[in-house]
Length: 375
Length: 247
Ligand SMILES: Nc1ncnc2c1ncn2[C@@H]1O[C@H](COP(=O)(O)OP(=O)(O)OP(=O)(O)O)[C@@H](O)[C@H]1O
Ligand SMILES: [Mg+2]
Image (cartoon, rainbow over all chains, first blue to last red; front, side):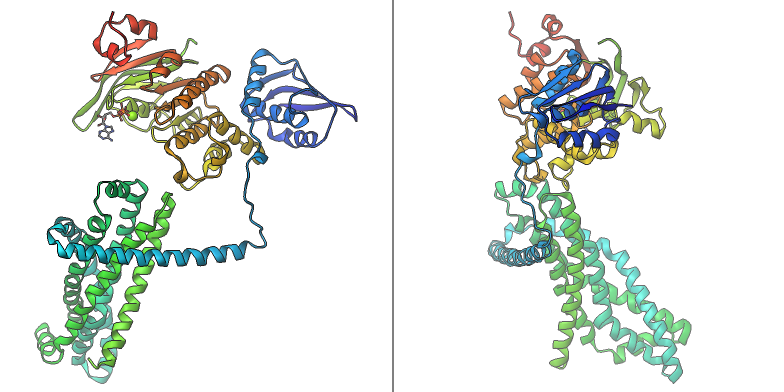
């Protein structure tokens, strides 16, 4: 245990005796005493270190800081009993002393801090919006350039993304749409059986699946899978300066990273939705058979007779819009990543939440428009 | 300056089919500044990572501070790791913390020092490593390459470790900075009785800082000893490496 003994303290001088070791483990208990002494003024300070047994850098710094607080040039401090090693350590610590007060810090007024935060939030939002517009503009510009020179388009990268974001998503899309088909048929079956209107299960399942549910389920699954991975991929590339490297070589990141992803989802989404249509209705068929006694053949014949093709087409018509939204948001949020790894997590979260929200909003908008024009 | 505190014995390392080290042995003594030299891709970083338990090796044994690596309980490993700190080749600062937080974090986690003193120690380590005070509250993404290196050095020095591992500390520093760095390493080694292990290509460091060094060449240890001994050693690779004139 170290001790920091104040032997004498009056107007003219202060003498201190340090016993045992002065190191990281032993400073805590004596620190308040050191601070009290440090805050006072003495014309003369004597520090006796003759019974100090050990000194490490933290201890040396504490001593150096104590001495510096009495006088800049050590003129009013008398150190006694230091062995040469301690002395050189203390000298080293004095040389490397840096006061916090020397560093200018902009302190926020804490009363104003909610206002400052709100202001910052608004400015950040406006900046993000402007950045989004410029991202959209640049993407459109590059799109037209690529359309003019189609051989510049990255076909291979697009194919890779169709496989990664489309084909590899099929199992999970199948599972979710199957379960949703199963559940709505099951809930519907009970109600319809009450009226003896069993056969209407076909209309209900097919139309709701084709027109609304399958596109929405597929889009939500893809938003969760691909919007997040696009943001994380592009964000990591930004942090590791890969994007800067691409720019420096004249490879445009929009052409290399964004367009392939956007086109991949644009192409893959309708296919995924069609796949989800089939699996979802199949889920409904199973319930129709087991709980309402409608055979598969009956189900299919009824569906052919009553369900218009337009329902399927409307569902498929929405799919590319969803794909476009998901890919654009995923890529855009990726380009917003700056600096820290934390920022990747932050924007990935935002990207998924945004993508799902905009898919649902876009779905609502299309529904309203189609109903208004009477389709 | 006598006991070996790191003993690498007959270590062989392989990545897949590729052999990186073939049966190499080195010894690092307490209190010395030891260099690991070799060409790009010769496996210097790899041997360092093996000593600090970030990388498994295929055969052989490594002993640090009397403890056999790979044969320790979890608590022993944590205790052992407190004895060393590492400056990684590319800094490896925590990107979500600012510079002074990066330096303070080992002190906050491993000591019970009062907050003000931790801050003071961190500031002083930053000064020691030559980082300008304007950079104290910046985040790693706002630093230049050399500034990152200095901040990372300050973090490595935070706890006054027994053993300091430095992976190419002077690459990315300006010549004056590199020379100050070399002086600092010598000063630290003598004042705080550190053992320092440096991976380096820097001729100035080799000449002025290292007590002893080894050269890894074609998967083997080609040479281990002092610069004086190396100068007498007749091998074209060593002469080339140390830029020695042929007489
Ligand atoms: N995780 C890994 N997987 C496969 N091979 C690796 C891995 N890490 C390193 N290597 C190989 O091991 C060899 C040694 O790499 P190491 O990073 O140790 O080189 P170095 O001597 O530190 O080089 P430099 O001076 O460029 O830093 C290299 O040939 C590298 O290709
Ligand atoms: Mg290396």
